[in-house]
Length: 290
Image (cartoon, rainbow, N blue to C red; front, side):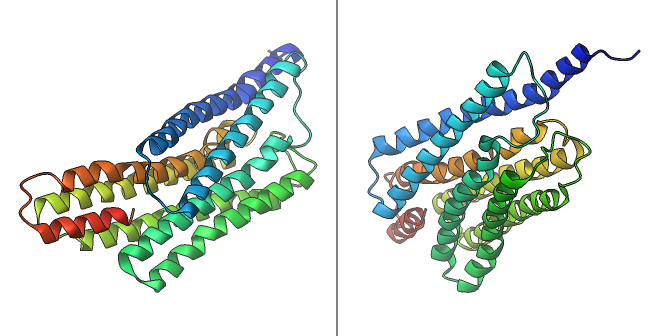
């Protein structure tokens, strides 16, 4: 049976606005957890450098701005235009600015992770190898934003003729994000594994740090691959936004988890009855490199 215009409109609302709403709800939930991490960081009163504090403040402000733009997007689509929803002909500015915000957040995260890698290994070769794919993603993400501001066709329109370059850039961004996450965290895991001493307490700390690196690389890779697959296969829906709009929050959660875990690891190292004083000092030095 042929579908009526009202049925087609309801399908557009369910498929496109429904997935967008899920993406925003997930972003709001992850933002709440990141906010909890920031407040915990302030409560512990860590004596970190002013540069690191400035980076953390910038990350918090960027996430707050990003969430506010997503709320505007929901207000625009789900409230103002809900009863007369039509496929948009162009990108709204919150969509266009999202890759730039994610790219800046990813840049801060990559600098932090590469700095950790260099302090652990002292190898400039590994640092350069990790830095190359790490900064390709923000650059191409910025290109995606610029192109989305100038394109005249929204990706929701299935037979878009002017999106070939745009699609290639989106694929390139996703691939570079996966390569960056795997390379940086893989090198960190390798460096940490080489630091094992055979002592239970020290190896427990190292195992915890390795687990952090695995989690960081795994979640970032899963979201990047899912973003790529859903963009290629379900472009006429908003499923890809569930992953693309939340990548930056995963990176920030990884940084904050690394910083907040220092207190717990120090307490583990400085427990009584630790007979190996040298081992305790080495473990504390490794934690300070977080």
